[in-house]
View 1 (cartoon, rainbow, N blue to C red):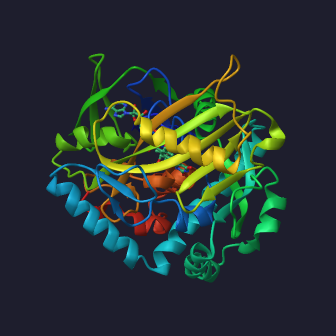
View 2 (tube, helix red, strand yellow):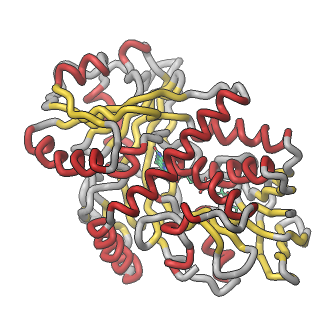
Length: 417
Ligand SMILES: Cc1cc2nc3c(=O)[nH]c(=O)nc-3n(C[C@H](O)[C@H](O)[C@H](O)COP(=O)(O)OP(=O)(O)OC[C@H]3O[C@@H](n4cnc5c(N)ncnc54)[C@H](O)[C@@H]3O)c2cc1C
């Protein structure tokens, strides 16, 4: 088939790669000058399955608009009734999420991680990645609270184990001795990979396999055309394809409006702060999540990154200084000498990105109700962890119509799409 992909974030480019591997002709449209310029630009890089299933999201509580950023969701949506409905529905769905859904998510992420490891080996890809992470529990109350989650994840067959503070400090020797630590949860297996770097590597693979990447080309409209689709773009072109895969992240809403499709999600904003590593021995070996603040700290090559905080609503542009300051504080609390924040060699980058979170918190991966329009959207806080699995499964479903059972829990139809 001749397939168009809208969006060259990690999901679009990885999906393009899988479709090319399966023998399709692929054109990727991207409105920005390079791939991974939006949500895939500087995420924490966590890919751990246990993290994604249990600890990727914010705490299920709201902070007041005037409050300092915290572990929950800071309400900055004013009197927006739709945002309020989203919040109530989403929170209810988090409480209700059953083991079947968690197992399906686990399958999606694990399948993707296996695929990522295989591709890395087969294609000799050189990218930042590391195994194992710690969830840090500062006091006895936090440790007791985490026990239910640990039991549930173990029940799903995930490899994780509670460790003492001493053992945690052996696994992550640069943790500050002065930072109070009660214990930790050790999550085994792939934990960190560099999302933007992966997207760039896949971009080159896409070109090698004959895929076309049309940068600085915004798709302005889609319309059905005799069993296929016609795409109008900002450069005035109007091309026909057999199928379209929508990987446009936040940008999908405008295109859906023209098709009469709803946008059954909300956009949350989150921050990351990256800085050059001062001294490798003072930096994390892999990654930690500070459960109290819900801030993740990861090592990505020669850089250290702190990431977290969730705002619902607020202005669309610029970083929030209080959120960035908090990331710096949590990073310095746990790894005081890890990052170089000042001086001529400092290369500090603060970033705010969008999390597209569906009404039930699960992604939309599969066929839409409009024939030939496929979706790979709304992966929330763990879109990078899901990207390789979603791309592989989606390509299977497009290529072999009898496959796709694994994607049933993520069917766009459940969201009216
Ligand atoms: C601070 C932060 C930390 C995060 N940490 C993690 C983490 O540790 N682990 C994890 O798994 N996930 C994490 N995430 C989530 C993850 O980054 C995203 O889920 C993922 O990058 C989404 O990828 P995407 O390809 O769907 O979207 P995007 O990367 O946003 O790609 C969509 C692309 O579509 C393009 N586009 C939009 N509209 C059009 C149009 N009309 N025409 C052409 N192009 C268009 C955009 O320019 C963009 O490039 C984090 C997110 C944030 C913000």
